[in-house]
Image (cartoon, rainbow, N blue to C red; front, side):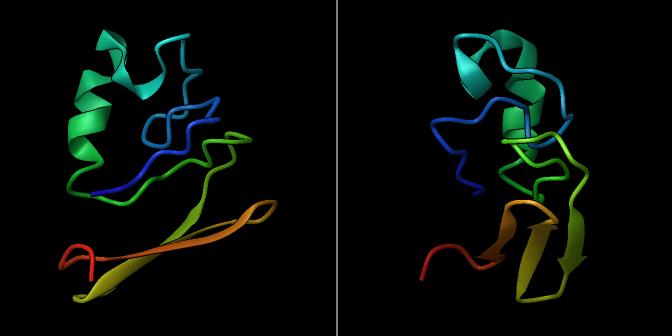
Length: 77
């Protein structure tokens, strides 16, 4: 499951601005469910499209401005 930063401004899946309820809002319910299965595509801080690499054991998503996020596809260690 992809963890979403508390200070996220943009949805990491669709790139649209988050409302006051954040990713928990109804308009991002589909995005929230999809992020349980796939890596983020947009940086939640700056809305830039991220460079995503998926391997059988993990995924890496990198924002040019904010760095890299990595998560195992097997869940938390």
